[in-house]
Length: 262
Image 1 (tube, one colour):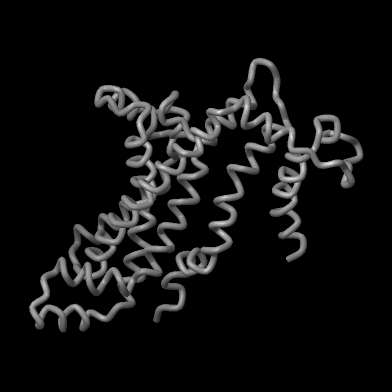
Image 2 (cartoon, rainbow, N blue to C red):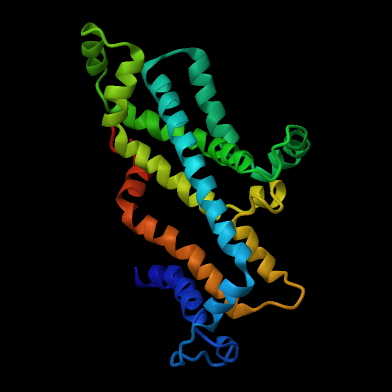
C-alpha cells in the first residue's frame, strides 16, 4: 500500500511543491526539500496567462453540461435496458460495449468536417455532446445494474395506482437509483475536466479548455516557464482532486455495481 501511494501521490506532491519554488530550485540536483516558498509563479500565471482562467471557466461549463446530459441519457437508457427484454435491446447492449472500446481519435477525424459544416466548431456545445456521448455507453450499463436492484413489483404497484411510465421513472426509479446517477456523474466529471484530444481538435479560442492552455504553456515560443506551468497544473488539479476525494464512495459503488448480485 505504501508503494502504491508513493507511486500515485509523489508526482502530485512534486507538482504542488514545484509551484512554490523559484526556477533555480525546481531542477536542483539533488532535489531540495528545504526551500523558500514564493508566490511569484502564481502571480505570473495571473498576469501573463489570463487565458488559463478563461479556460477553467470553459472547462467548468463543458463539464457541467456534459455531466447533466450524460446522466439523464444514461438513466433513461438504463431504465429501458432493465425493464424491457428484446433481442434488439440485447444486441445493442453488446454494441454499447463495442463502441466504448474504439479509440477516440478514430471518430474525431471523420467528425471534423461535419462539425465545421454545422457551425459547431469552437463551441461549448460540441464538447458537451462529444463528452456525454463518449460516456453514455458506460453510464447506461452502470445505471442498468442499479435499476436492476429495484424490484419490478414497485413499478407494478405504481402502475396499478395510476402512475404513467414517465411518472414511475421520475418519482420512483430515479430517486431510488440516485447513487448510480452520482457514480456516473463522477466518471463524466473526471473525464470531461481533464480531456485534451477533443478540445485540441474541435476548439481554437472561444471554447478552449484549461488542459489545452496548459499544453500551450509547454510549447510557448519564449520557452517553458516551469514554475508557472506547475502553478497552472496545481490550480487545474486541486478542484477535481478534492471532488474525487469527497465522492470516492460513489466512485467505488459505480466500479463495483452488480459485483455481488446473485
